[in-house]
Image (cartoon, one colour):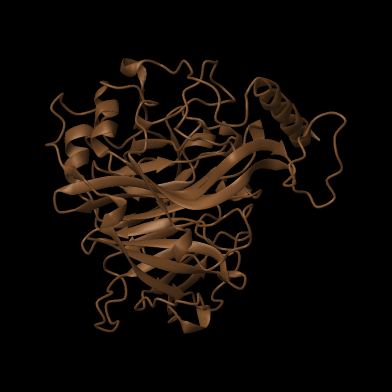
Length: 448
């Protein structure tokens, strides 16, 4: 009853605050701490401050036209304690993976998160992607299981208490400082997390054999609605200049704008001093991107351009190619009108309508799979304190739907899930949920 009451109260408060909005693109901007106060300190893992005023040398920007679609591949069958049905929530590239694999030009492996109820981790090979003009999964090659599914969060910092619509991010980083091996880093959150009993740390680490779990850690004083869904590597040179000691980017977008009205991003440190932080520590963090929260920030609000409360930003990556770069987020973008209620356009207001299929939530008249492109120099300016964290906006967008297999009408949600990046070869891997029956497939783009 405590959980239900808290949720009802929170929803009521958010709906009341949104009553003055027209659609989901209205509003102007919130009061978020000014630049000198944006560091989130604590724990072990490097300085929370930005680099010098010079930042890094100016570089060119990767454009949507620089991404060439290579095709897709299927995921394998069950293993360990889970499978790939209803998956799509976490993906990481491992350069040293599959050392005995074929010499097919696709070395390394992927760590991914499987069934949505279990949230276990598995390692798979990377087969050669295939372009299927008729979008048939049967035409694709299938990855092989290299390391079966395992529940890496069991018993780690109460992370296994998170069970409702759990979010997961995962990334590999090579050994830093005196570390003897590279690590997998993960974060966990859930849909409703405002109750005291669910106020648990979010981030953890384990070895690449899925053993030796450590953590869990909190990201400064940040809201769990803004930090615990996606993880990706920050390039070493950029981090050295702008976020010393902070090599991981973490963030989350929570529908309704509770974490922020656009994707969030924080730079965090997890062991650059040579060892992992103590279990339960608060991690140093520097804000790189953070729009106004409908749950915590007063109006006027600052939003991402073309923002909808029904958006779903599920993954991110820091793309690099020679002297060009881009920070990208992949997800499902709401278009047209936006409302809280039922998919047929019914608004959730008194007298409350019947909801026999449990579809109440944030909806738009259309949805599209999309990739947002942000300029890393804008994020560097935020890290230095020269710009506010809500000022950067996407400089480009890429429609992903032409390459996707699953098309279920204009109001289909979950067009794409998480993504991973092979920095050495410039390959971006993106999961598409429910594209192979109940299983995901993995799409591959080459950054030219």
